[in-house]
Image 1 (cartoon, rainbow, N blue to C red):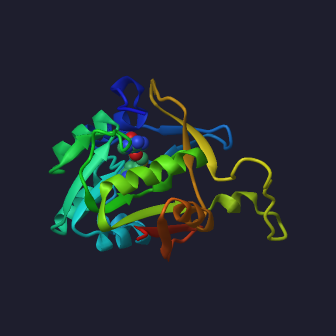
Image 2: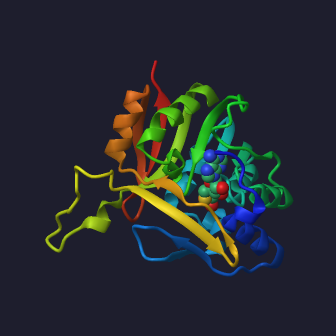
Length: 242
Ligand code: SAH
């Protein structure tokens, strides 16, 4: 993966338009697994007070040199700067990074998490708003944790939120109908569109905590639940072993 050019960047276009005009049209989301949906663009500009409790918790716990991965409009980076914290915000959307700079994010960079030339080390790495999505799919686990090892200082921590999508498969009797022989049920493909701008389709991984903890262990990390959200979502903290 690399940077997304503006003409293929529906979310960045929506963010830039909302930043410029204070309003935006519909950011449409398509998936082969779900009905068409939309992301309320103003939600991407949420303030600390408007954030879900698990995000507020992650921001409160972030310390030292902080990396905000997939920072979008910069909502978390700005909230942490206001707390006096030192944040580097990265995103593959050049449009979003430009908006972050205009909004006052001190260190905003157009950068892919997986860009191997990026070699700084951080005390805290944040991946928020179903941040596990950036792992992409199960094959992406090894690459993800390898990258985390490269970017974390000794004793560093990763805060990542996700949702357990099992509720989508709940039967009337409260049991879950999940095909365990099939693909992992949290693996979703998305494609977004804003006005005439259509993005490429991409894999986005939602992961239940036990499965995350299993993979973390495989790649030398320990995962713990920091807190649960209101609807099958949770904040995890991961630390490197040894
Ligand atoms: N964290 C923000 C935005 C979440 S949307 C918020 O909570 O509002 C996910 C963001 O991750 C998008 O802005 C997308 O451009 C970015 N992104 C996706 N893959 C990335 C990667 N490999 N490296 C850096 N950013 C990435």
